[in-house]
Image (cartoon, rainbow, N blue to C red):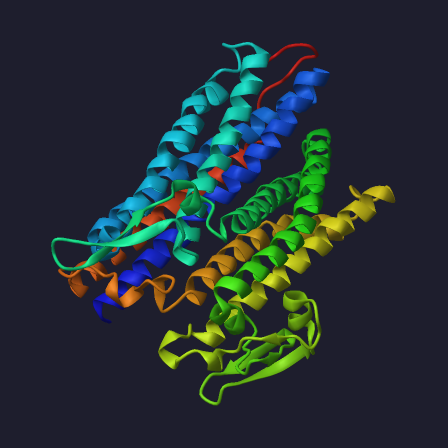
Length: 446
């Protein structure tokens, strides 16, 4: 493989592995605020047990997120130096803001969250929990800002460099931050993260109920997580629609690839299928005119097709088509699972339907898969550009990096990440199997 393919594979692998953990941190952070807030206002020991148990899980996930995220930063300088020089004025500002306004806030209060149960007042501890959750959410803001600017650049101009090249320079900070796709993508990311955290809690709670272990704890945790899951799953429909409208206006080639749409004409929406890129045909089950209606408000409204773009400016169509439709299918499945739980709750059968509890145990994998597939769709759908319409991915690679160097580091990172993942699963399973090891008496803080 050439250096470009290896560098893309390495970055894709490291960011995909890292992205297992931030959504869990964001989602669990929200749920921790709810749980500890319930204890703070009701003083019921059960809510304290819940908060302490899930705080230990949160600490493990946070550690994994930090350790796997550092590697990506180095790749900007080693494998993608040309890109870094081009966008450093903008991309660097967003990453710096993420460190100053998000990571320091989250990590600073994390010590109080983890170790302050017996040492600080309930009010201060609840405040610390809220600040940790807020920091996790702020972190997503700046990462999404940086990535959204790559998708829809704004608030910049191009200036020459001493070497004869060009670089993007900020002309309006808030224009760059609030570029056309930032807010819609941020909402979509948040809802995916809330689902990841909620279904993690649902999975463990259902496991306890099936094993008839920590029953009161599991029932209360499941109810809280189910409310979050049901709400976030429906909000995801709204943010997904908003994101599609933004993509239609700013990246029409990506939207056309999502549905394998080649000719500029009224467009169907596929439920499933495949794309014959050689003959420029899409086969499968579709609803005629639905994409046109969602994008233009009219079933016969024309949607720009891939034929409007030269072949070298189109993304890998079938790959994007498959990842996008898999993401949508999982999203619909998550809605069905969550609202089926709401129905069972209403009928008084939530904790006795073993088939449903079994589904919940395995459902933890679905939000993770949807989040990964969503990022694949967004990033591969932007190709061949690394910064849309400004810089191609092939032009962003470092000039001096060698294929053998990238391959060696890719193999080493793969080995290290495998060990980290095994350690994570071992520690996570140990905490879950150990369950609630502390006893909480009525009215006693810890």
